[in-house]
Image (cartoon, rainbow, N blue to C red; front, side):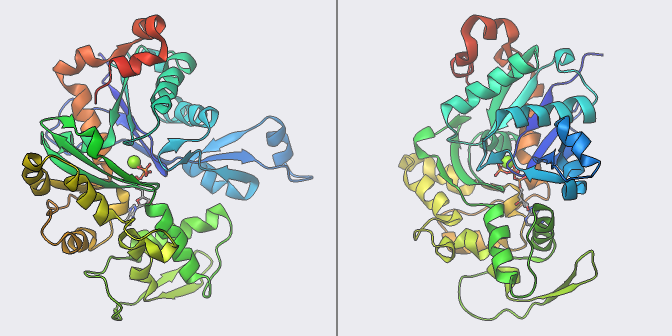
Length: 373
Ligand SMILES: Nc1ncnc2c1ncn2[C@@H]1O[C@H](COP(=O)(O)OP(=O)(O)OP(=O)(O)O)[C@@H](O)[C@H]1O
Ligand SMILES: [Mg+2]
């Protein structure tokens, strides 16, 4: 049987991988989700790990987290941008060969990668080069997260606000075309919430290693929420969180103070106005007047950083009628992957793939020549 296109949504925190399904009648979701994390063996004198270190042993994703005591851990992406292509290459190899049990060369239906808006042009070229030169893939393409999210909702026009781990972006799209001059992006996301939560908790518990910091992430994901309106009033909600070593952390104001940074980043010392709601306001204000109505009525909220209880309600309250978020979807963290899967499976997409022959003829510049957006 002909394989299906393989979709890889590389994220600052999570890499989502899976084949585009044959049948979209059930909710499509990536088959593999791994932290975009690489661990290299540390030299510990007299320990078995010396042997591994000497051979440059690397571990990835959850496996790297599990072995964190003997590894130096590193996230090779920052703010949606790959900082170390060799490490990302190894991580892709791990995801596709080790976890999905596929050879890159045999993926004749194509590999689709995703990218955040306003990334440097060179980033797309390096993605293209890595797939063709390191993995010898038969064909590939790169699509934009926001455009994918719109496809996942079967819409042609809308304003996509995506809040991830490393950045938040707001992209206006009309009749399938990205309005590039109006795209907004801010390096603010889930990781900033983690760091602020860690700061708020430091008088109760100190998390030092990358491994321990994952507990902060878990506290955030399990317990935090966004309050309905800005203001100083005390919220009475309280929660208890038990660490694996048995220690209990009592949580109260931190629960909403940590994610507050998304709506008010002056708390982090950033300039006034650098917040998620202003991305929407600025994107709308810079669009032609006659597009604004359709955009403001189709505001899609997605990305893992928007998973907090109360996120959309607070956004709506901050926007005060300038735009209204559509009902939030439970699978909103995966919308970019889902939409890319929809796009890659369209028969009309066949001509859009970049083939190995085209890469050999034009080099990595082909990704701009045959750009999807
Ligand atoms: N239930 C939840 N509540 C709050 N935050 C959550 C929840 N689930 C996931 N997150 C956060 O979502 C973020 C990851 O989201 P996502 O997978 O969209 O980002 P990414 O694709 O890895 O990064 P980016 O798109 O910024 O490059 C992390 O900060 C994670 O802690
Ligand atoms: Mg992402």
